[in-house]
Length: 273
Image 1 (cartoon, rainbow, N blue to C red):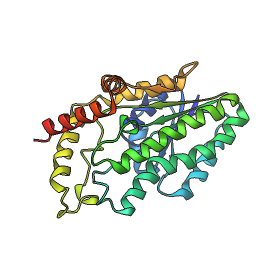
Image 2 (image 1 turned 120 degrees about the vertical axis):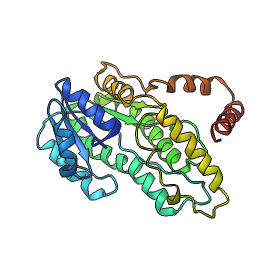
Image 3 (image 1 turned 180 degrees about the vertical axis):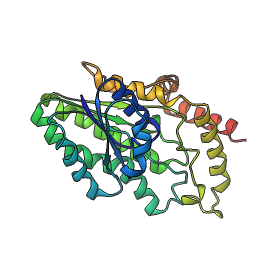
Image 4 (image 1 turned 90 degrees about the vertical axis):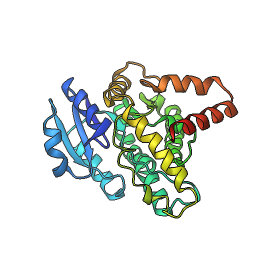
């Protein structure tokens, strides 16, 4: 099978590309800079082809899909994986920061999916996997931009699943929890929370919680395995909740909104130091 993955140069996207290529599938690895990503991608077993795809640059989307379709007549899968985050309260969030998160995590994937869909419709099958987050199901403090982008991805996936089913196209959502990636570790607090902000100390405490959660989180391979399952299942589920996310997801589903809100507040207070 031929599969296009966004954000394939590192993290979950890179691990997923490696697992799929090792299984004998051909992977088109969407990356911002193919030359920079090539050495790491070349270490993966199997056929992995770097494709320039920068979701912050809309002009790269159509050429990327054209480059993929020039090398295959059947694109089985699209994995909308690339994602970025920041940490900042709603009041302080600079417009350009909010737009950067939304463009990368949602609008870029929205535009890419629209560009891929005519090809999948023509072949009368395909699989689209959206890598969302538990933060796409409930809001968390300091994550307004990130949660908005993932909520939007959730809505897109749920609507699309209805629309494309008659064309043989399956849509699945992956909802990880804390994963050992670089999202929190690389967070620059100054991007979205000014040093003199009244929220500054709260955001610093939240960042400590996030970084600790990420360090102790699921191995990225757990999420990559789940993505592979969603791509290769005969009948994919709408939602996959991998690893440690399953317990928190079950808690969220089993309590009232107010009870869950209080649980999150208590957890963050205990971990903030």
